[in-house]
Image (cartoon, rainbow, N blue to C red; front, side, top):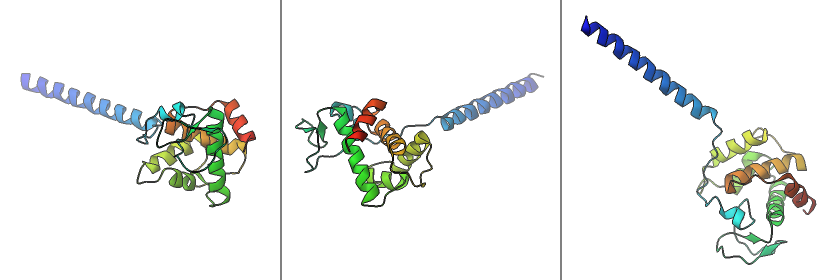
Length: 169
């Protein structure tokens, strides 16, 4: 009789453990994970460069001399967001990258990033399918820029900054 009781208890424990594992796995799948790009997540905010634009020879409006040797620094967040919008404008109109997949593959190449997770996050956050053509209008581009900023800098760009940056491109 004791042997039978321990088998029942063991079955109960195994079933409970299996249920717990399934529940934990389901909760992980349901969360929209922000992929880690490997960059310092506060750097973009410190530099007023929420999409972490690398240093170049471009004389961006609002560009200032900063202490960061790898990434541009801007006088305020509006200029950093505007620079990101100008980059996406070039991607869209010069390079024909009109969907999230094309934009992110160029912005965050696979050699440095988890590009597929980045694409999935931006697509989920914006509500736009990854391979659907975006319209070059504020309602589309501002959502993409904001989602990218959340990945790059853990920074949700306020609507007034997005509006002001858009008005300056």
